[in-house]
Amino acid sequence: MSWLLVDSNKLGSMAPLIRFLVNPLTFPTFFDMHAWLKVDEQAAADDAGTSSTTFFEMAHGCSVYEMTRKNADHNALYNSAMVAASQITMEIILNQARADGAAVEFVAGDMFDFIPKADAVLLKWVLHCWGDDNCVKVLRKCKEAIPAVAGAGGKVIIIDAVMGAGPASASNKETQALYDVHMMHIDGVERDEHGWEKTILEAGFGAYKLVSSVGIHSVMEDYP
Ligand SMILES: C[S@@+](CC[C@H](N)C(=O)[O-])C[C@H]1O[C@@H](n2cnc3c(N)ncnc32)[C@H](O)[C@@H]1O
Image (tube, rainbow, N blue to C red; front, side):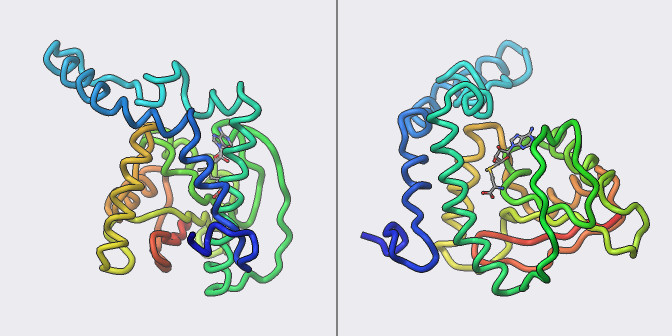
């Protein structure tokens, strides 16, 4: 068994993430990929554009976040998976760029409606869940939340995969490809640097920087 799946390792166990990925509401939806591709082929043949339904929606009749809203067990499973994955990722990222202990305030809400004022907004593993239009909407809200003046220190920090960035190893490329397929099942997008730049600039930011890449994760900063 991998040391990453046992509780005793000091970075925390990734078992909750595996439990989420193989759960009956997530994993079997991938078996619908063939049918989903056929729907799009048929829509193209009928000249009806492409279908907006994801294979998660095809299987369950609702989006992944509608499912977490209406199914408390699934929501708990999802959240525990995200905590497990974040624990290990943030330990590694913060080791490279130690935070200065600035106060963090937790505010619940819909990010499409409102993001509270802040010096910096951190979005980790959030934007890849959304297509370009929604991504731009969220980034615009983030931009409104930070100090507007360029050079005043305000920034939006994105932690997500950047396709083609990071180590040139086969395992990194394979992981990026798997991430891409995984995001496709809920209508998300894994972007290369050009895709990120386009989305960030379209949201109105003046500049952005790809700060660093640690394995599959990259850190980008967007400035007003
Ligand atoms: C892939 S998870 C990442 C969670 C966490 N940032 C992490 O890295 O582990 C995406 C997160 O976006 C949140 N989310 C989805 N839609 C949202 C919305 N409209 N407003 C605020 N958060 C939302 C979900 O609840 C979920 O926690």
